[in-house]
Image: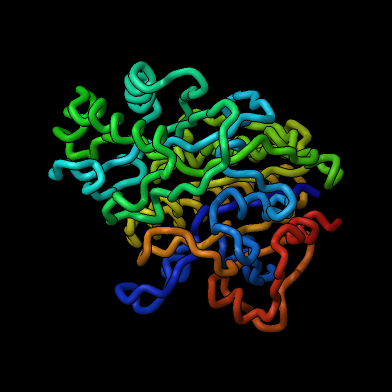
Length: 402
């Protein structure tokens, strides 16, 4: 038996009036998920413990079987693991987004944040911009590291974990009261705008109709994590396929294999086929028992507030990830248990995460797991099933039959 989690980040949503009261998941054309749902278990699960922030960090830890209340030490330290930063016990890691602020105002504090990803800026362009900031802002005890796309890292030696605002939570809002209380971080953000606003890369981006990447934004502070081995915990060998440093960092911390796929960007036009082929290869040819395939696109489209693009991302997940993985593994003569789910909702209406329970589909190619009444895989289907797992970190035990 082979096992896989196929996770559409932020895929769950709220009913949308323009879609006739359906969610993007309900509205999307998903023939593969529809087929699998006929013999699958449909249920609802809480991946974000009550009282914790609904981030991809806490939620994906849950899906992988790690209780966030026990293992979570901050988002950025997990990303640090992904890019090879060996944090000292006294280090504090911060996510450093390159974001888009409005430019008409005189004071930095009066500007509005309009894009947390700067039109999903390429890693190549972001690295040039971060280097320009490093030359002016980096000093003793503060070190920047390049990540992926708009997602980068700041390590503070002998730092303090402090509350910081997530940029995707305040899109469309004036930044004044959202800035760090820490004077050094606040000053770095203000100065980064002056460094980046007229950078040649941003002049060219605006000429192309793209959002300029004109400011740093710090959030997600935390200390070095300590995850137990995934194989030691589950007695299954595991691999991670994701474009996102956070997921790769969780895998590194859990001593899972990290599979890098060329062209995997975390955006709508990511290399779906490359991810699916890599998943089949690691299960069928490389001997892995378990693979976790993470697709960021639904979450990014939710943050963009585009239900049309979110629907497209879900359709891509269905036809270009789920279908080829199922067909590739079963064609090789292997049975497979699939857990298909989001990590959290990212409703288009509010463009940020919520902590509501999310629907899951558990499929086994060797068994009929369905209930007497066929339920579609959707938010409503999960609710109507009557199956609810309060502790999300226990769901993987059901997948792996532990």
